Length: 391
Image: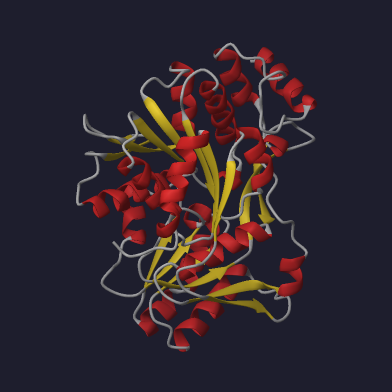
């Protein structure tokens, strides 16, 4: 296995987890926490299943494959995964990578998670509703029986989580390889696809080796960028491939796995965390993402294109320093970057709560007294319950 910055700290992480019941781990992108920490817990001989919770299906599948490869096994033996419409587990499976939604549903039908020894919450900084729900339920389980909880992220505000879990914070510094971060010199009013084309051409003309990962807000922007890059892909002899959550698993794997030629990978934020693209040398960051919100006028959920936070920008830049020294070219100015919020607002403050409230009611919980990491606004619960009553 390739040495990673997290490796010298694994013994301390495991011993602290066993002593106190949990750890909050803050480690830079590229440190190796997603693959090495679950493996360390497995090697420590915990009796029971180890669940690793990922925010996205692609990350869960690819992380399981990476850990299995490092063990010299096929996925579905000791290392498996369960995501929507896809499962690879077996009788010998000890570490299971799951998405937040899968874990939330499992906790509804199996409230005590019988047979589970540890839960690793990866990329907790994203604070999706299902992640918040599962974290609170895990803490409640731990009050009734032994359950190890590890919360991990590169950009997490660790103190509130550590207080919530009564856990020690462990910080791991150091990136595997350096990343040269560059910003636009001035605002650019050209269409996004044109700006992406110009940035890709600049990088390819500079003679950079390896793949280029481009972060775009959605599938529509990816399609337009694909059209713009038809000429440069032929001129420079590179493949341009899309990567987003609606693609079939086979096409997602094609985008992530090394190909016969250099690639320009046009991705949404599915590649922002918990994913290593072998051969990735450069990142082009549009600074935008689709964010789930609720309309204040209609009460209906929708997706808005919004500027990302500084924490997300750090995560994206970290994709370039995984396997070699890299470059991150941001299509926005330093001033724009510095004016952005530290972190994205958690979904519990901005998303429709109807599905979450329904899940809590199905489990016999009152959403107003549920032990949240961060309680939702009372008005949001009122709106969710009113909608459920009307339905």
